[in-house]
Figure 1: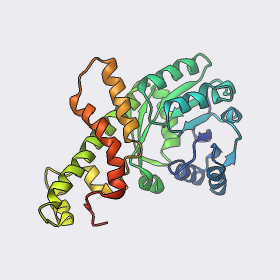
Figure 2 (figure 1 turned 45 degrees about the vertical axis):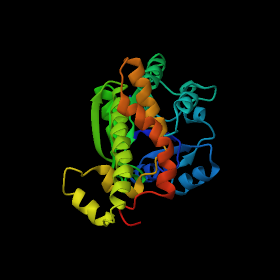
Figure 3 (figure 1 turned 30 degrees about the vertical axis):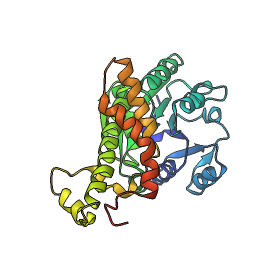
Length: 276
């Protein structure tokens, strides 16, 4: 097993979140190689000190791979596809899945990785782009103690908090529940804001009062960051989990439908909780 302090890191997906992650890893002395379909993203990563790999398969010399692509099918493609990283990865290496995907997706990849002598670190991240800039993300880990220990050395460069939830898959379960509560609250803030505005109350003053009361929430505090960009995907993951468990979740089902419109509302006619 590679020495955790000397991991050679490959990162697939260096967009808005991946770039500050690259910056923090490079600044802490890690050898980082970036791979992205966007030439612009690659150039920005190179300017931060990263090397460049033309395809995931070209990251085979890395001992620790971080995935930051958007969807389950993209995760499967960059790991298991013809030019996927698993085709060239050496035994003892780790694939850290920081994409937000189904728990079943990471468990299936873990089984295939272990068949080749590699491990998966289930490692979705929370808190958003502004926290990424400051190196204060939250990482939700699922994996063995040994894999998590190696993961802490890498993720500790850009995550101020790391929580080990259990086995592979449990990191994604935690992320799904976090996002479910985020979107339930965010939809509530749209409706509460509309009702409050109809009375003529100063919404910024109301927000200040709510932040001292039981109405306080991280969603209200970070309202300016909320875009609902990934909300539908998040709620689809929750829906899949509920269907698998044969659970009826009427509130979650309603929120899944409401986030489709919420993205437009937030961009064009959202309650001005912060006055912006």
